[in-house]
Image (cartoon, rainbow, N blue to C red; front, side):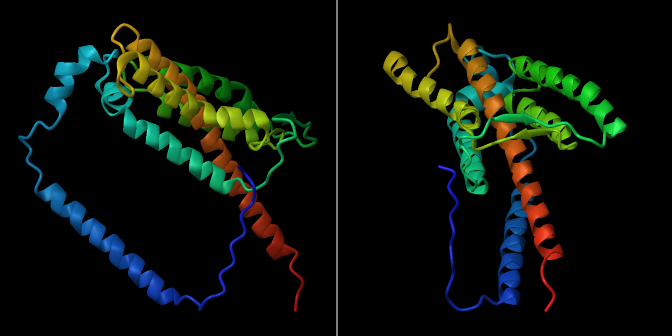
Length: 248
């Protein structure tokens, strides 16, 4: 699943100026359409807010945003998690599944400021991420916010090069896919019990939404951290290649 894909293009050279012009025109066209939408918006139009308010008691949560994302429009959230997983698969070409998931190395040069941040700030970020996950049912928060905060804590831990995660290990693959897998399993299972995809029973809707969000939080956090790690590794390898390139 994470094997490297090499694509070679043997056609004519692409004109960079033409590519920049086409991209600029597309961006300008999109910006023009967005401006027209904003200018034509009726400030007196309530939108979907009345419908969400009327149906909030049937969602299993009291936060309207969570109700929309995990119940009324759960299909969109399911696809967003799937797209994020596809992006992670695309940027992790190295297949090292047999290596351990987590490795800790002792750094000879210790940065006192960074070590203090790792010891005090990172645990606080993990606790606050748990709070955001739990509060998402009734207050602003939820899986994406909690996952992003956990990913930030992971990035902070990785700055000292003492903590290393193998994102292509078996454990990492399980954690990366558990959010989407649980979402799909619950959604398809409800077809059998309730007769509709993601049609939560009222008595268990809150519990099922919390379970989906908890698993999605883990997958989102690991996905964002892996994207950061992949970009950093690519940048380091590019700089290393330029530095060690033999002079002609």
